[in-house]
Length: 216
Length: 291
Image (cartoon, rainbow over all chains, first blue to last red; front, side, top):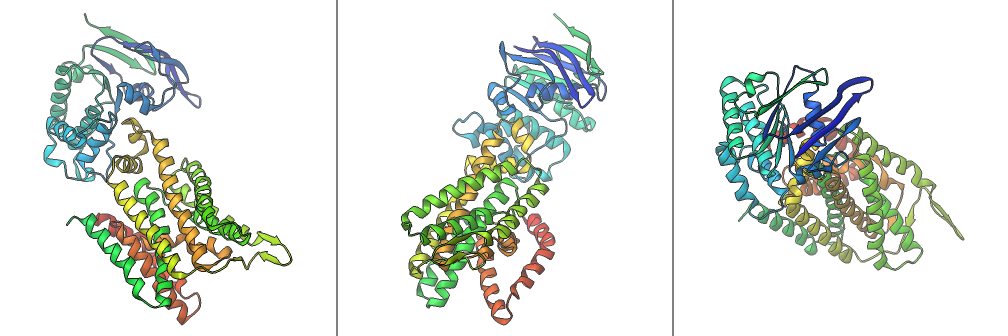
């Protein structure tokens, strides 16, 4: 469904990704590696937020390498930031409604409320995003992503900067997404944290794929 | 009654009252309504796209200038909206190209446009049996103040209602998302470039039509239309930014206060502008905290 083919990325003379290739065969693929290993850059390239120096991104056998990020969201590939980036001056409901707008359907408000309920943030719908805690912001980020009706969700370190309690809540939500049959690419520092969620793992180090482990 | 309805009703009252006043006040209210439209056009870019422009004298002044020259050459009045439209498109293109700069650089770049136009305008000279333009500017035949007021108040009303409708629309929501975080907006599927283009077009369009009204109101345009005073006017008038009525009232107060202070001492109103500019960061923080 999604294929990354020989992707490299260089900033000035600093090589961040070297000839990375992977395929999202299973529903959920974990990308594991230490800091500065190129995980986030890889997800940002797949999302269209950055252009690769060379290589290709294929989605349903179609080359989407030169497609803008917003067009990729229309195709169903959506990215969630490591540090949540909500629209701070808007309310929680408006933030989720913006995600719903992409599909141009009717009853956007009702759909957004439904998603807020599903994510457990329906009591905050009239609150401005700037007053939310880190855990609530993470849930809002996930709600906004779900609102776009994605096929593939790119989650950049979803447990970063969360305490144990909030990390558990986010994990439960990701397991719920799994039950709902969303395809996901999730980055993390360690295997352990993704063990219950991912169907397969890729280990990335210094911009290169070291291990590719997909069960079944 | 909703807040929106109340704001619209309040604006209608503000616009109708001058019809019953004497010529001087009608003239003054007419000027205030033109500057209120100019401020709202600026506010559209600031509030909905987060871009603070000190270059709105580009659509405002350029339309005023070109319309004055066109009327001077006896082009019919019905062609003037076309001029406003063309200038708005040119201005929107320039604003859009500038919007790729970061927010701080955008402020300085747009300010530069105003300064360049201000410096360049005195060189616009038309040689006929006499010299026209230059420092003196261009004069055109006078129009009845009541007629100009009717048009300018209608323009202000349309701009005001347009802003309220836009603010509460899907497009307005997308604009506010782009205002808060361009990359996050892109990542959620918003066509950021398209939203910026639309914002620049709407903002320039209303500023251009306000410029046209300015020419018809004064029957005269000179290089001072591009002055720093006019460039910072919308910023000062909307310093208490809340809803859309606040910048309108701010513009009215500023015009009335300027005329009064000018009558005490020429250019004394600039002192008021300077004070508001100095305390503007605190005022903005206060109004943002309230918002």
